[in-house]
Length: 602
Image: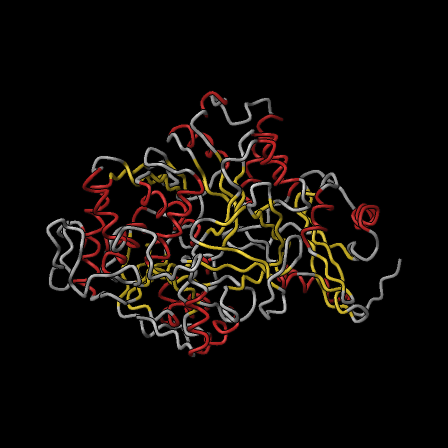
């Protein structure tokens, strides 16, 4: 098991932050003993029901029923345990992309009681090498496309930040066998479908209660995912099997997901959003998941229709891509959803789940007006397993749009059943604030992480007063039923502090997005000798648009005044985002360094 190196006070604070309405995490909200138990139950009660449908980018379709998926998972578990020595408490890393093989590997690790450290292949080699070392990965499974890169990461020069001597085995996944590494598909195909593991776990007569101490419990670590911060070493977020299941239960309840529904995954499954929302949640509900190799705006609606998808989890950037493609379709005289698709063919589709990135009200309004489907906006972090709140599904259309568009920011909704939320003074002193007051969004509940791996400093700060401090600024408003609707106004570190007056970048961006021709607008704090920080703007224009710096500045000053308006505008084409669609404003600060000594006047 992972040693968190917690001092007594931090340990107490962290445990308190994992309470919900006074109930400690030891008071389970799910009836399963581990993820293996849940999977086994579905395999027995609904063996022929589809669980995983995988669509590769070449059009290949693979479907696995619950029984088939369960059998394949146990084959992989036998391979990892018997051939490569993976035991309960070990770390298994993957260097891969969305694929049915990746899902099988995740679940096989959870059957054993090992934790998975999925790597984001879009990250740089040094970061991946650091994570492989820091996570203490014993085995790395690498898709064939990334074998050469993996060899460089694992065996590169230590002075360049490369190398991971702790890795004992590298396994090739997919492709033709090279002879350089053990080949996953070749090895796994003849293995038994029943996982024996260490000494064959003893089961009670009802085949549900496990008595062998080598069998994982809900407290076993399941995921080790690393934060995508722009500064400092990445921090490993440790999530237990219980974390995954209790958040999945909360998502199921909040979204009204039942066993006859299908969720579609177009997000990367190296991140908690793809893993929890569209892998674990369908499993918990006995539903199905349609896993896409990658997102395609041109294929999106066609896939929704063909696979009878009910719910899709997205980030704001994907909504923007779908909107752009839809406009291009109608401009060319084609149907909005694509050739041969109309609304009558989409009666099964319910809504979009949207979180992770910044959802601009202008984008949300235009998207809902264009497509007619609701966006259930939500919020969460890796540290809270995934989602912590959603707009409720029981809102009328008028209420839904009011909470999205009438309060200056789109509401991120009300807390899910697995956690509580509150607003505290941003100083970190533990002073809870009231309705309408801006401060730091904090979360407490059973879905809060077990801690940052080997980061006592970060754990002490994050859990200073018995809640998890998100680092995001926000406020809440109450409805007539007393439900608290939360709003996020920005990252505390990204707030623009101009002469002691703090501005949310979201406010400024909403104004810029109303200027015709602007596709993306980001407000950026940059260093300035006169005010400490000044307001900069990074703007990406729509195709064919022609705007000047003066156009943007004049538009903003007419609506916000001099102090809050951008003083410098930089035009670009590249948008810095994480793989989950979060804008990375801090990466743009260097574009404004030439203006540090400038005194901007009205």
